[in-house]
Amino acid sequence: MYLGVVTGTVVAERKASGLEGQKLLLVQPVDDAGRHTGDVQVAVDTVRAGLGDHVYLVGSREAALALQPWFVPVDAAIVGIVDEVYTPERSSPASSSSGDDDDGAPDAVDDDPTQANPSPPRKRPQAPVGRAKRSTGKPGGET
Image (cartoon, rainbow, N blue to C red):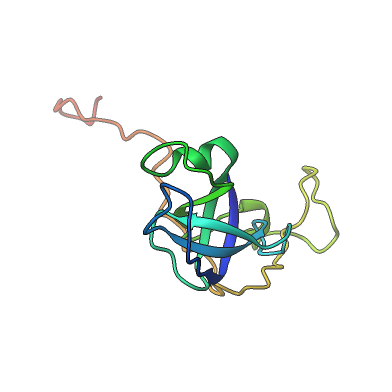
């Protein structure tokens, strides 16, 4: 599986058997930061993606299996629309400016050229770490 951005559509007067009624889209493969990773390719759309959508695709045999009937002759198939790409090493605001921290992990990098989500991700509430003592009901606070 790999990521891509829909950049256009393809119109075909004639299609191979099994592709009738299927939408063909131009997709630019990208990495998790939105940088181009290869040439634009044609992919069959199975999820009703639109222009500018971030999508994930499958290739080769998996792409041929994504359509009904199976084994339709395609090289790439869009199988999902991406809501958000979360990469902890890129989104951590608590990094130092010295390059590497003491733990050996690289600093966070904010290099997403698409600016799809300029706001930082919301922090989830943390679960309590310890257990609370249960009272046995004995006088004097014994447990």
